Image (cartoon, each protein chain N blue to C red):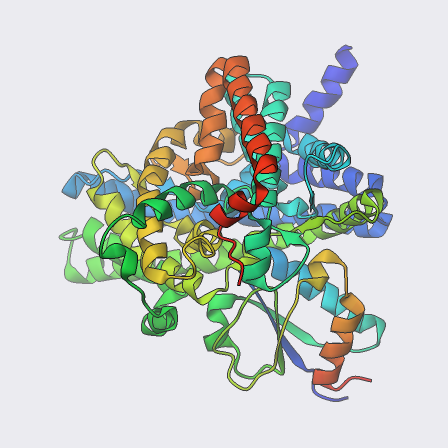
Length: 96
Length: 460
C-alpha cells in the first residue's frame, strides 16, 4: 500500500469550518476508496505547519505555504461545487 | 401535569453532557439524518462537553490562584478570568434554551427570506450559539425562557440585517459571489468599526499612514501561535504572582508549570470544541439541505462562518498587534478587573470584518481595533456576573475563590450587551431595539448603495 497523502486543512480557528471541511473531504475520498491523513490548523499557523504536506485546502486566505499547492474554497461549507473541488484534490494527490 | 414536570426535571437534572446529546439526537433525526449518524453525533457533543470541562479545570487550577496572588502582591485586580469563546459556546449550547434556538432560528430565517426582508440564508448552524448565549443571559435576567428566546431571535434578525449590509464588501474581500457572514460577533463589530474609521478620516497625519501587514506577521513569527502565547502569558503571570514566594527554585517551578499548563489550555480548548463541532455536523448539514431546498432558486447570499475571512494578511497582522495592546489596556484602564486570556486567540474574529472598511490598512485596523477594545473590556466587566451565572446553570463548576468568568466573545459584544441591558425593562428595551432595527432596515433599503459603501464595499 502506498504512503498516505497528507492534506492540511486551514481555517480561521482550526475548529469550526476546518472540522466540517476535513470530515467532508475524508468522507468523499473514502467513497472513492482513498484514505488520506488530514490535519487541521489555523490560517496563521500555515507557515510553520505546512511542511511535509502534499496539499493545503483552506476556507480562508493563506500565505507562507511555500511550494505546496493551495486550494481555497468554501464548497465544503455551502455544498455547492464539492464535486469539482474533489476532482481538483484528486489531481494533486494523484488519485484516479 | 406533575408527570410532565417530573420528566422535564429528570432531563434537566441529567446535566448538559447528557441532556445536550439527547437534544442533538432528536433534532438531527427531525431534520432527516440517519439514526446511526445521529446517535454518534449526539455522543460526540457530550464528549466535547466533558472535554471542555476538563480543560476549564486546568485553566482555573493554574490561572485562578496566580491571578489571586497577583491581586495580593500588586493590587492589580484582574480577578475576572477570560475563559475564551470555546467555553462560552459550550456554556451557550449547554443552557436550557439551546434546544429551542436551532429550530426557532431556522424558522425565523425562512420567514424573513420569504417576506424578502433578508437575502441571507444562514447555514452556519454552529454559530447559532451566539444567539443561544444572548437568550440564556436574558433568561437569567428575566427568569423567562420565552423572553430569552424572543431576545435571541431579535438578535438573530439584527445579525441577518448586518450580514445583508456587509455582503458586497465580504464578497469582494473573499473574491466569492453569493455569500455573506451572519456571525454573531464579527458582524456586530462592523458598526463601531465603521464609526471609528470615519473619525480617522478627519485626523490629519493618521489618515495618511500605511504599513505592510506581511512584515508585521513575519516579525511575530511563532509568537503569533496560541501555544506560544499561552506559555508566555502563563509564565509572565506566574513570574509576577509568585515572586519571592519561597526559594528561587520553587518560584521557577511555578513559572514553568503555569506556563506549560496555559499553553496546554490554549491548544486543548479548541480541540475539545472541535469534537463538539464534529457532533453538530450531521445536524448542520441536514439543516443546510432543508433550508436550501425551501429557499428555491431566488438570488440569495449563503451565510457562512466569518472564520473564512480571518486569513487576510491585515487581519492576522492586526490581531497579533492587538494581543499585547489588549493586555496593556487591561492593566492601565481604571476599574478594569478582566484578565484577558482565552479570547486573545479570538481577536481575529473581532478584526476580520473591519478589513474591508479600513481598506486593508493595518495601521488603521489597529487603531480602530484598539479604540473598540476599550468599551469591549468594560462591557466584559459589566457582563461578567450574569455570564458566570449562565455558566453555572449550564453545569460548569468553578473552584472556590476564582469564581467570576467572562469571554470577549460574546461577553464583550456590544450588541449582546444591548440585549442584556434591555432585558431589565424587557418590552420597552426590546421594543426600542426592534424600532431601531426597522428604521435601519428602511434606510438601508432606500439607499442600499451608500450603505454598502459604508460597509467597506468599493467599486473599481
